[in-house]
Amino acid sequence: MNLEQGGVVRAVLDTASALAAAGLDVVVLTHDERDRPDGWKPGATGVPHVVNLGPIGGRGRRLSRDQLATVEKLLTGDTVVHLHGAWKLANNQIARRCRERRVPYVLSAHGMLDDWSMSQSRLKKRLYLLMGGSATIEGAAAVHCTADAELAQAKRWLGSNAEAGFVAPNITDLSAFTDLPGPGLARESFGLPDPAADAPPVVLFLSRLHYKKQPETLIRATAVLAERGTACVTLLAGVGDDAYTSSLRDLIQSLGLADRCRLLGMVKGSLKLSLYQAADVFALPTSQENFGLVYTESLACGTPIVATKGTDIWQELQSSGAAEIADATPEAFADAIARLVSDRDALKRRGEEGRRHVFEWLEVDRTTDRYVVMYRTLLAEEGGAA
Image 1 (cartoon, one colour):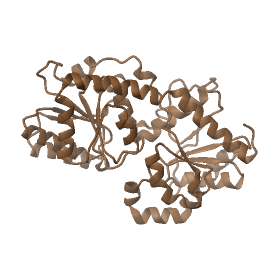
Image 2 (cartoon, rainbow, N blue to C red):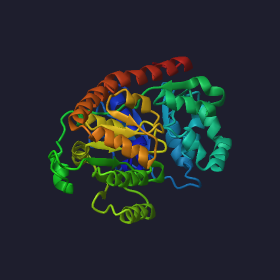
Image 3 (cartoon, helix red, strand yellow):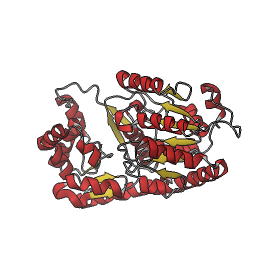
Image 4 (cartoon, rainbow, N blue to C red):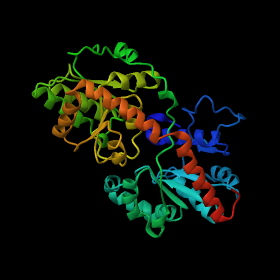
């Protein structure tokens, strides 16, 4: 439960919380509970029960015999196991024991079977599939994808399990976005310009600083906009490898953008929400993104977005009315940002429209019901209790 690892952890926390609140008996297995929600108290009702397996230190990060014994005690006849991620040896170990005991399990791919993802470290992933990964995928009672676009790419790797695809958005807790803190906190904390008519627009990147996310493309787009006479302030919030982060600083300096691009580091909590609100546009020129929680967060804060077709939910984002979908090039992102900020009144209206859309699309009770129905169907098919 380390939120610095990205959206998968956030998805697990939100899903577990919603399912427990809906009356299901939810157990979360983890080896790191540093970001365990405060409300998940031992013995409390309506919240998940956490089982900390302790550090995974075996060869290849496999579960130990004692850790597997703890898992096996939980694999009863009225249980559905939900595994997250396609590249964890520990998941393969758990999946194998589920199959031996006829306990159905769901595998959430989280975009890891997307074309771009599968093109990275190709040999290593093919070997992993041969050594148990394919058995985990093909043995799943359901393979969860967040959008039709993700399932279309994942099907190539489902083998004999091609019909097991289940499409539903991640269960997303937007309660923190109901009453927003306002942009003032971020403006004061980061010294951002007041929202005067002549103030330069603020463009926000909030994600891991990683080559997959292509923050350098947004930095170069900022330079393109400057060359065209459109000044903007670009903020990059997130953490990454020291060497990669240093290369981004060097790029900013080399392009003469020290007064236009800033690296903010990790931003959390109310300050993060305020930062979304203080931005005019959220932009993420990613090569690949699955559900892209940051997109939904930005829309929930009323901030329009620029995304790419590398995002599995790009069609859903486009239907919000508050998204521009662009090629992941500096020129294309500069064009999209320029279109959005050219009319501040229209930009505000699009932001309001996007906020309404995301709260309707991701209404938590309706989304949770889809998962509950799936779990009960799988149990019924295996002959377990609903």
